[in-house]
Amino acid sequence: MRAVITVVGIDRIGIVYEVVKKMVEFNLNIIDITQTILDDYFTMIVVVDLSKMNAEFPEVVDAYEKLGDELGLSIRVQHQGIFDKMHQI
Image 1 (tube, rainbow, N blue to C red):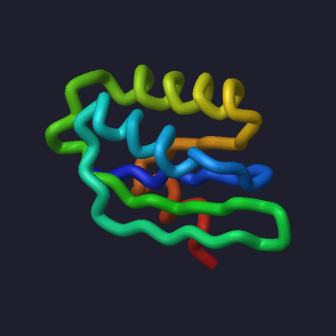
Image 2: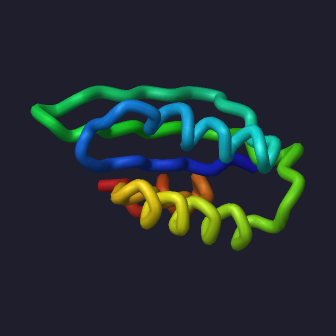
Image 3: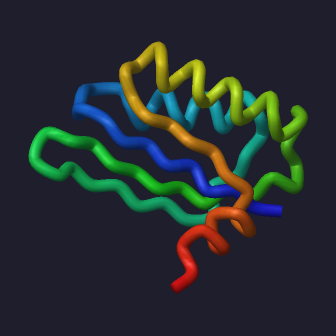
């Protein structure tokens, strides 16, 4: 099973570190990652493997929402299937 993690917010030092640190905490493996800076906005999309996740999916979602609040970012975690359906034309 996979999930897509999206991160958007004003750029600052340490965003990638904090997001990846949380991945390590939940034993999520990065399958693919892209990031860029658009003007002053940091954006990142990460596809992660959930097969060895050491928590329930809602706990991961909640932890990333809380991290986003703490860092002043929008961080969303979605099952890849849901993400794919939302973005089909």
